[in-house]
Image 1: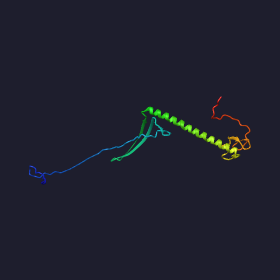
Image 2: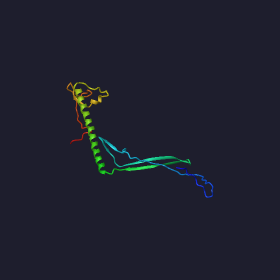
Image 3: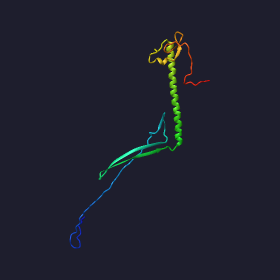
Image 4: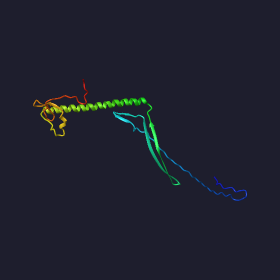
Length: 181
């Protein structure tokens, strides 16, 4: 392919083209964003895998600082983002609350059973100790453990866990027992 040449003008002279590109640009861009991310931090956990989430309200304060060029302006923005989250399936929330109540009752029953087991084993072991003639010293840090347990000692006398002879046993209802009359 042959080279391309500039054409001559009608007056016989050469054509001269001068390129003089110029560009002027000015502008200001502010790129700011505030992101609010919903989380599961507002759940109530009841144990055994029971977690319920109800309506939550969250306030998130924010601060955004910036530097504007080319003027060198410092820009500060602040505010509060508010979020209200509510489950749309109210039946599921109610069911979860019922399940949570059942779990709470079960945990209380297990704690009561553990306390009863402890008290029964304590009474049995203290009574064995009293029947065998062994007692805890009253000033011992463990003296109070068996002080309220009464059993027949090896000398056929009623004794408590610290060796004291008990002459009269008075049965009074405890604070935890309901009156039954």
